[in-house]
Image (cartoon, rainbow, N blue to C red; front, side, top):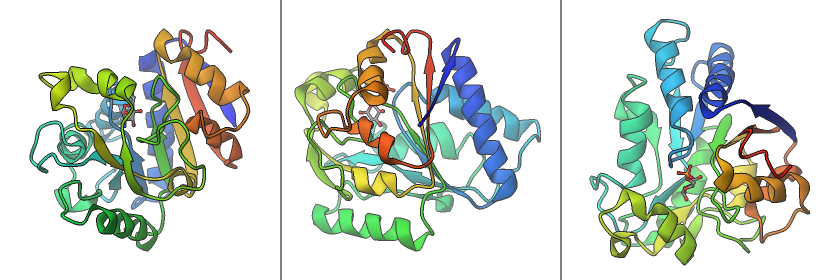
Length: 241
Ligand code: GLP
């Protein structure tokens, strides 16, 4: 695992956008796994700026989702489908057809999970998976004590994660209790994992991820098992290393 400490979130975003741009130059139709939340926004902004000024051609890039709420209609502004379309797909000028994600409104959620896991394989696997981290060390929506070998499946959110994500909704009551998430095993299938963490609130989770034992109570610690994992942290998030 490579750990890169940067002065601030903007620099981290630039660094990761550079890595994505280099990947797209090598492999124009790369499958990019994207994460939601506030942390990756500087990456998407920096990448969109590179596309706008012609530094990289992303027109053949493919985008895939990490996780999704269960029960929100796909058009809900806070469904992760809507968020990824708004924050990644549209700013990069990509068509909606370049994008794939699990169907959180499916009647048979289990079948939707299995279908998405299989679809990632059919698409050739994820080339670069961008990850954030929850304050409890979760990646995607793999909450503490998720199996490190897990595949895409339905999970119940902890109250801490629901509270953390309530800022995107009008009230805590509106935050769904259930989600679909790529499993930790699914995430580990990606060729390159890049985790970005910024701010002091993530410092303990980062320390546990990087310096703690590999343990399901800290799902992100599974990155230690991956042959090509990069953890980019600003100084605040690195403060407990
Ligand atoms: C959600 C997402 C994660 C994300 C996390 C942290 O739980 N499912 O993928 O990493 O939020 O979000 P933020 O970056 O806003 O702290």
